[in-house]
Length: 350
Image 1 (cartoon, one colour):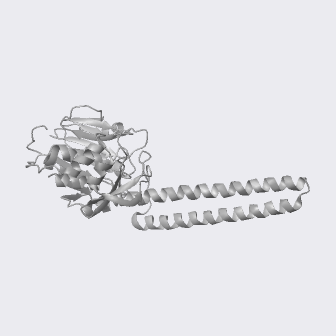
Image 2 (spheres, helix red, strand yellow):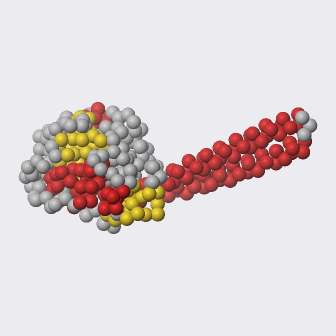
Image 3 (tube, helix red, strand yellow):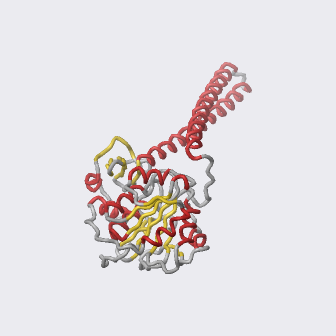
């Protein structure tokens, strides 16, 4: 462990849909002489231009994170596609560990490893996004003596991540994005204070993200077996009680909040319904083709039977279409009631 710093010099920032503009605004407000290191995770696709984008208007150098790189004050490190951004002692780790909350890079692994390594020196920031990635990690930061900062939900393009953090974490500061930079510029100069011992569960989950361990004995230490299956690998899920927040992990190491499990189950149902619709439509088309052949051979009774079967298959396909249409309509109404129309940056997953 490095020597404790007298100030809070580790700032970890996480966002998803709508988080791009919030991060840019935050970075543009930070002073050139910031006595802290900043680490950013945004949910992203397989290709990212985030360092180039976030560099614009920032007084601090913004770089793509590299595994093994030493942590330097006054620099912004941005997660790269396909790997988790983790902190270990005085350097960065990039690991292709199990996805968390359906994402890699995910926010919770960064927050959790920062808390486990740097304790009270850490300031965690949760920005705009859907679902609840970042909430468990922000809880870990607080449990290890750090500070929790959350974007004001009314200021967020997609308010679900900030709302989740406010619901489950004893948050220290809530600010709109255009006030966060000034706030952080002051907080990083405050004394950090002593760090409490790192709880065992935080150490274990940090090690899982770093691919240092993952087996059923570890899951038994973190929680209890549930009746649910992992949407990522379809293995058994262990139920983790994290304060009042319900989370899950599987023996492979995939970690999900309860709402991430619900979202993944919804996507799986949509896929199954789409497959079912296509299968019925293909069966109807094949039955009609066979009926045409039977009529050419003057086997009209069999042709009539095949045509009846084709109509039945088409009716089944229409039932599935109705299920899909009604499901999407209900989901769309619920989303619009809560946050209105959302236009997402093409680089974000959600």
